[in-house]
Length: 113
Length: 116
Image (tube, rainbow over all chains, first blue to last red; front, side, top):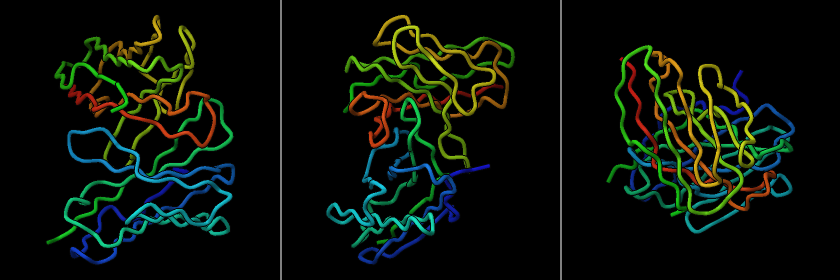
């Protein structure tokens, strides 16, 4: 049973518009959430994170929102650029020895020029 | 660049043969992880290590073993490879190396393994 789910396998957005990627989780013990970006033939790279004590974290064009009551987080990219085309993974961790991250299945974002 | 090198980058092998993947880090971190990436499943933890000779199982550890004889090297072994182990394997180290929540992981470039 997947504890972290990304229900949209793919998303297509026009350049300059907003991209919204969604993630749901089931484990209430998760207290730290991350987004990773992955290009083909490369390892995932860290993008942005949020602690459960916050509901929003912003870094340039990227903003992550956390709704703890709904166990839902989202990543907003504004404005979207063609270089943002990649697979985005949501991940969560919390209160476990070894800081193991649990990942969602990923969403492939395509930003069209 | 977090100083993580994985080798080989690509490997094709036959069912039933043993395979070892290597992860080398230059950061002197205690915590190292092996994940596999499969379509629809994201990344799933296979094994992790919290020090030399200290390892523990992850979510999908069946069919895999690991060894950590030196801080810098973490080896993943498939004792008898099966087609279901065809995947992309990623090694990772933890940002602050305390083994706690709120630390990000840094990943290597991956090993594409095909078991025929």
